[in-house]
Image (cartoon, rainbow, N blue to C red; front, side, top):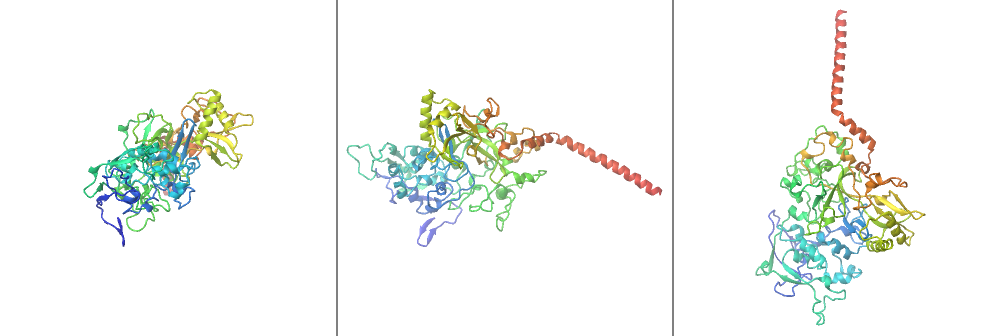
Length: 620
């Protein structure tokens, strides 16, 4: 829609509007592609001519930093989701990071990451905006203000989602961001031209507004060599845009792949039942111009507060969703499940996804790699199935509301100082890496060697107490280590060492492959993975949780309560009761026959006594 004096210009049609438009640069000037010094195009100035960029920038994909303590309007944090993972092998750190105040996650500020460092590290899967776009006043106060002024803002690239074909290349945007060509990334990703030059090679004292220096002719901003074949005679460009992005556009950031010895090959992974039926992501994850995308659960302040675009909303109907067909079941032809014979307590204690989503549970939670954590979507010859960080799924754990849901899980690992009130103050990854390196040298340990108790002791001593008296600690695999008075390391459970979990909803399995389809013993059997599936350790080759359960190592005498190693410990259920319940289900069929035979015997006895009484009555 275009802005006019009387308001926005709308097509009001289901047919897509043909976007044959002029490109505008970051100053709002029309771009002449034949000009050798033509700047890159600006999505904010180009798309913003017709669409409310400010409103869009508060959408779910762009508003993470608006929930942090940075001033300005705050966006609701929403249900915990997938974090970014700050991974530093040298420092033995893997830290869940989010601008949203999710329990268990740390903000970039808490992790010691400046916005510039955040974008450099995680920009490979950012659609722009958020931590990549600041006011000039905010930039001037940042330590990397010079770098920002050279590279420009990372604006929201609308074509990340709304490209109707594969001409837009998000991996090319990632390459440009790695070169610090933030302003040039949308132009390169859309293939409008080729970018010559790298902003990261320019020194901090480079002035982007100054004329070229004859002493340093190589010190110039990156240039755009526009593809003139993309422009018509009026210098307009055709943008192949769709309102409903295909699933392939979502997959660049929202892909996961199972890894490990038990993982099936990619060609045997069936995928989501909804996509197999011809649906696409945006059939359920919808939004308006505010880009406040529905996330599959009902919550106040969201685009779908009535929960009509949820599992129950589509298949069972949503109560209180308004008049008409909005809250009725059968959206997009969704069948109404019968759930015959299933006790109603299952629908109170479990999410729909507990039975219908994610991989089938095994004795050990399976390893999975994701786009945000492991950089899937970027070409690499070095990516391996055992690359850390180690994320496992499905983990059947209780959500904050007490309902059990399948989730993905990561054990945080970090160095910190613990205050008397239990608050954690992180040691920055750079400081931790330096101290770990010095400790290795002192103990004559090679790089990459296992982080054992002796090395942990040396690092904790070197860190010392903070200015506020905070005690140095190391968290890993669900356990916290601190120094005793005698100089040795204690190992204990602590809330700061809790795993980070986030719900998984996809891939959805068909009804014929849902938990319980083979009977109650899918979950209720002695040792069934739903309750007794194992949870892996956080760090490869060290601190595996199971070594503290007697599976290869002695249990520390001072560990009052060890880290969880089975799913029932994250569900708040009693393991003995579940084992007894599971054992009872093994004889459930036999007990049914005993019950029916008993009923029959009782019925025969009652009938015999009744007949005898009737005879006596007739004789009398």
